[in-house]
Structures are given as C-alpha cells and as structure tokens.
Image 1 (cartoon, rainbow, N blue to C red):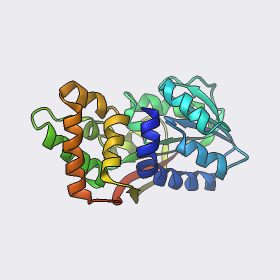
Image 2 (cartoon, one colour):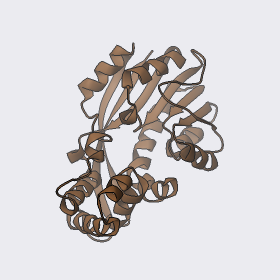
Image 3 (tube, one colour):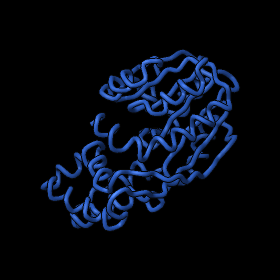
Image 4 (tube, rainbow, N blue to C red):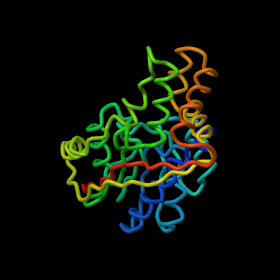
Length: 253
C-alpha cells in the first residue's frame, strides 16, 4: 500500500498541501520539529529542505509507512509512534506538524494534549484537515463511483474518516479543550493534477483503507472498472485537475 499511495495519491492530493504547510512552518523558524502521521514522507522531505537547520523527527503509527518514509527522507529521525501516547519527554519540541492525520486519531483531545505535553512553552502545533467531501473533486468523484458500483452497501470510509472532521468550530473546540490557543485558522483551496482519473482511482482503491472495504463487499475488479468510469465521466479523460479544500490550524501551547 505505501508504494501505491506514494505513486498515485501523494503527487495529486498531498504534495500541494505539503508545500503549503512547509511554507507556513518555515516562517516560524523551528529548531526541533516533530511530525505526526508522516506517511511516506512528502511533508518531511519539504521540511528538511526548507528548514535545513532544524532537527526533524518523523513518526507514524504504521510500521510500513515508517520504513518507506525513512528511505524516502533519510535526513529525519523516523520512529513508529501512537499520537495518543508519544514516546518523548515533556517540552522537547518547538513545533509539531501533522498533514491530514488528525482525522484518524480515535481521541483527538487526548492526542492534542500529548502534543501540548511534548511542546516547549510557546511551541506551536501546525496541521491541516480536509474540508467536506463535496469540496474535494477527486474524493467526491470516487465516492460517486462507489455509490454506483455498490449502491446497497456503499463504503463510507471517505465520508466518515478523511472528510469526517470538517467543521472548523469542532476542531478549534478540541484544541481549546487540550489547552491550546488558536493563533490561526485558514481555509485553503488548492488544485490537484493527475495523469488520468483512472490513476487516482487506482490510488484510492489499492492504496487506502477503501481497498479493504471494497474487497469485503464483492468483485474488486468490477468495482474498480465502475469507479474509474464514473470518475472519468466527472473529471474528464486524459490529464485531469480538481479543486480540494482543507482547513489549516496553528495552535500555541
């Protein structure tokens, strides 16, 4: 899964927002950076280039992602870690960053409290979360394809998890409950570009938890064909582009 995720989804969905977060992080001039849910390292690589004097520690819950990311961005220290139980002492980082990972935390307030614990006084927490499903051209097209292919028991992962934490007021309240002051809250819409709708369909269906949802429900090949057709109808043939909205938060400890 990390290889498919890196090849088919990272350039389209995640690199544009990684560049946005890197620019915001660089302005803060951090010296000790902790990254949560680092995945295959697209944000990590950007941080290493933009803030070369900083010590970057990258973590992910998934061992396979840690192994892949460590090979992709060897300039960081990589560790497997649960964001709700971080294996670091109090007050050792001045910036914690997370790209599209907070939606996966089972207990967000607990995770944010851990982030606050490992931050030095005055440290910052910079992260983003996807907006509603309808504001993401690729995810919305994929979901429409899943509804067409599996109308009775449609996989709900995209709506429930990646796009299930899409109310900025809820995010801000969770940060406040963990002791953070919200310095900035921004809505950011960027454009993703892919060689084809089929390429993005493959990334979602083979490189994310949608894969397991589809495989439990029926013929994965038939579903992939139907989803690819729907996405092509919505996004167009050949190279495709689509708008994607996210919310960016900066909290201070």
